[in-house]
Image (cartoon, rainbow, N blue to C red; front, side):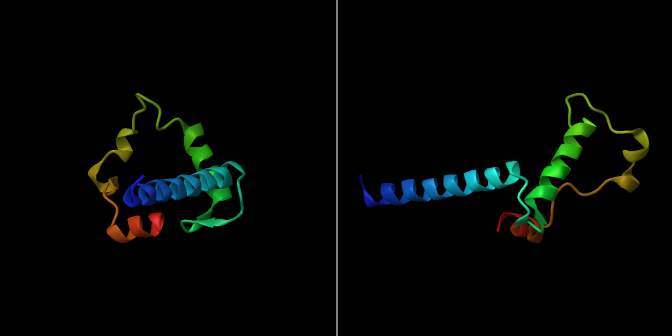
Length: 86
């Protein structure tokens, strides 16, 4: 196996391990900080969103909330993305 391939496999395994740790902390509702909140608060937020069914297929937005005055830009600022994924 070439050195480049070993580095790539090692990097993949490190990223896979980190992802698994994040998922386990999320599932455990850990009170550890992540992305400006905690895994516990993130879990609660996602449960609330799921319970609302607003992301279900065929869900509609109330007409009063669909006006131009209420629309938010869909593209986050680069700094927001950086802080989420760092």
